[in-house]
Length: 443
Image (cartoon, rainbow, N blue to C red; front, side):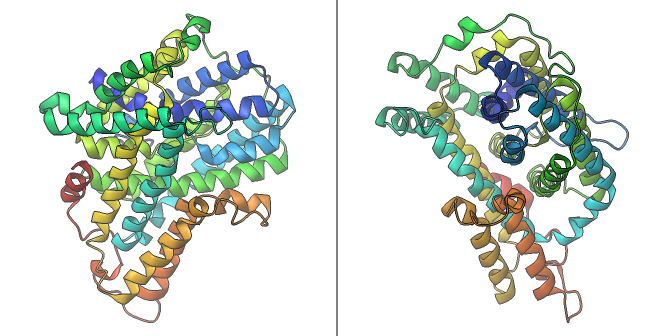
């Protein structure tokens, strides 16, 4: 269980520490303070993951979900706190707390949107989740930092390709438990190969503290500004939309379709975790889609495995030197594994679409339009540059825009002006074999 949990942590570690690495310097924090933010993010991600997987009362989806720092909030957080140092961080934390409490209150109503996610919608959104994550893997494969001198070098890309081949070979050749941890083994082997190549940085271990507790309100008491609260509330709605889609995707993969009760519990865990996070100097938390691919590929569906990963995250937040060991994995190595992980999510979405009656012209049109709109932020990152900044929070998320387009067109083509048809017509979730979806994603 520990090993499988560690595999989840390895798959999402970079995604957790990246937002504080971006926000910290942008608001004027020192390298040491930014490192403190990174440790706090790991700690709070662990708490949020335990809330999501184990749950209590009506909180938690009780699905194998890993929660971490949401990327959706990075741009608005930088805008809110730019060059304001501790005051900027305090305003960001205050806005996150209020937005999270608002989301917690809205969760019972927001979860009712599940009725608007039939196969034609869920398949489209799951596919977009996977496709939207692939550029992250490509960026990691190139080195992760576009300003670095070796970004996109043949060395980095070759290491990513080698790791990809290793992971695929391990999945093919190994059996049983070893096959389940093929991703982790691939990351370890890739990292060992990267050492003589010279792209493994041991500096983080040398400079890391042995123990470091994320002191509550380290940057001062939260401050509350209306503009910041509105901005982060929009981000929260985006995160809730994406989390709903993620829960529907994971529910199908683990053969436990997410109903309204599950989604309500999951959204409450997201929002409660996000409200607690700033108290320990962390940012907004949401479900991490990249771990859905790991569940699909390994077929390890136990939420307790992911809960073990949550415990590891808390430990890493309390013991920075341990966190630095995980950070040894070079981004090109992580990128090679990420191509398989994120591609698995897209494959699950494509299989879901197989049950969406695409022979109906309307459903095929829904998928075409939603995928097309959802890919805009990936294919043309500056497409919406002339729009107001507040709208960019939504428009720059291809998952959110694609989801909205799919829902609206499904209502327009399959509901308005006619009686409700069958599942295949796009009226309710279902209509495909989730086990097949998982098998396609894994193989």
